[in-house]
Length: 320
Ligand SMILES: [Zn+2]
Ligand SMILES: [Zn+2]
Image (cartoon, rainbow, N blue to C red):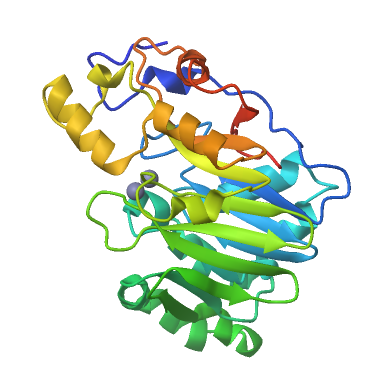
């Protein structure tokens, strides 16, 4: 595999497929979480950008829309055709929760908004997110105006699907309950991520399980309210050992550390936090493993120096 040096944008990580998707949800679970994208900013043929689907009974809720989420849905569905494919059908994708407005978490938005009309969605996409989400959606509508015009008035226009080209935005102003239906209560809790005024972790409370998704960010803020006693806690993971190899954050190790830990959680912090929160199952994703040449297990080895609880490193298509 080509080493990273000399081709800095092309991480040697892409030579390693992380293994087949797993079905790890308890038998009979009414609430399940599907990893649609376990990756980050780095282009990686094995990992889409960050995103998940939480399926509760027969309803599907999306979290984040990273690069490739549309293909991530197909990959997850094809990996577990009997168990989740029907729940990920495009016409069921009607509700999306954004953790924050970084591009790696939102760049797949046009796909989940604009593609499902072809597969029978007849209602608008409802998007929940931080303040700024409305502006993002309005500008996306402007950006895709030619497409929307043609789909609304062109020869291929389908009157039943006009609403599928619309979005309804719900900006979340404060931490607390943001959504509730007969299946689930969804709460959003702000925690620190750089200078974002709002960066939410989501806590899904259903009849049988609590599923928490941290998105990006540090412990500071109300991450504890999202994660406390969760059956499943999804969280990003970064290396501290290999931070000198990071491709961002500054020139020196000190600069990189200062920048990176203003956005992200340190491995030991995550370990202590998950233990204190009594998290039943931790799942790491959006990982930053800066080994060079790439060593797939190095980051988890580092993390396990601090953490002895149950932990999985997420793969695209995993179901928990
Ligand atoms: Zn971010
Ligand atoms: Zn991110």
